[in-house]
Image (cartoon, rainbow, N blue to C red; front, side):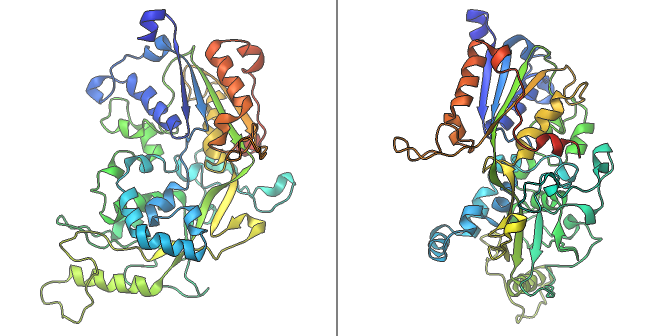
Length: 448
C-alpha cells in the first residue's frame, strides 16, 4: 500500500525473534501459493523492500530455548535463591512450565540452527578468562569444509551429571548405549502418553544435534505427534537439499542455514546488535537416579500385558490424564567454574545477554562473503556491532544507559537509534552507516 501511494519502497525493522519471523516472511512471500507461500512473485522483495534492519536478531536461534523445552527451566530460575525457587515451584512448577512451553511452536523455531556444523565446533567458547587471543578452544576446522567433527571433538550442548562422579543410572529409562540413536527408544501409543526413553552415551554428553533430536522426537513428553514441534525442522542439511517446490521446504523458511536469501540485488540488510555480555551457550544437567528408576518401572508396567503383577509400581499420572510425568533431571546449579565461564550449571559465551554472538553475527558474515551460496544475488549486508557499556542513570534507573548493548536495552542505544534513523531517511547512509563495525572476536571465529 505504501508503495502504491508514494512510489517508495519500505524499510522493514525487527528486534530479537522478529529477525527469525522476517526471514520466514521473506521466503514465504516469494514462494508460490501452491507450495504454501504468499504468491508475491520472485521479484516482490526487490520491488517493495528497500532495507531490512535486523536488531539483535535470533538468526541462528538461542540455546536457552533448550532447557525451556527439555525441563521447563530458564537460567534465572536455576540461579534463584532456594526460598524463591521453592515458591515458584509451588505455584508454577517445572512440570507445568514444560507442558506449557512445549505447546509453543515459536520456541521450537528458536532452537539453535545449523546443528553441530556451527554450534558443535565451539569456536566461540572461552576456555579461560584471559585477554589472550588463544582463549578460544578451537578444534580442527575440517567441518566447515563439509566434514563433521567426531563426537569426541564436539563441544556438548548438554553435559549430564549423576551426582557421584562414578555413578551411572541403571534404570531402564536411561539406557547407556553409544550406538542406539536417541529417537530409537521412544515408545508412543496412539491413545495417550507413554514414557519416553532417551540415550545418554558413556561420554555423558549430548551434542547440539543429539539434543535437538530428543526434543523434537519427545515433543514435551507427548512424542513427535504434538503439533508444535512439527511446524519447524532442525535439520538444516536436509533443508538445504530440499527443492523450493517441496512440501517440507516451508519447515526451513526460518533457517538461514537451510534456506538462502531470496533474490533481491538492490536490498540492503543491516545486522545491528550488542556484544560484550555473558550469554547462555551450554548447560550442565543432573539426573535424579531414584526418580529415573521409578519412571523406568512405571514405563515397564505400561508396556506389559494384563497379566502384569499388581506389585509393579504404577505411574503417578493416571491413564485418563494423558499427561507426561515430571522429568527426572534439571539444570545442575551446583556446577560453578569461573575459569571456564560456567555459573549455576550454565556455560556462557559472548553475546548480548540473551542471544549468543554465533546467532547474532555468523550468518551476517556468511551473507557478506563474495559469491556466497547463502546470498545468491549479492545483497549488501552490513554488520554494526555495539560494544556494551553499562551506565546507571538516576533519570532512567531501569535501563543500562545510552550505550548499552544488552538485548532489550539496545533499543535505547543512541548509536542504534542514529543508525536506524539514517537508514530510514537515507541521510548520510553511505558515509555513516554502510561501514562494517565488528567489536567482538567474530572475525576470528569465522576463520574456524
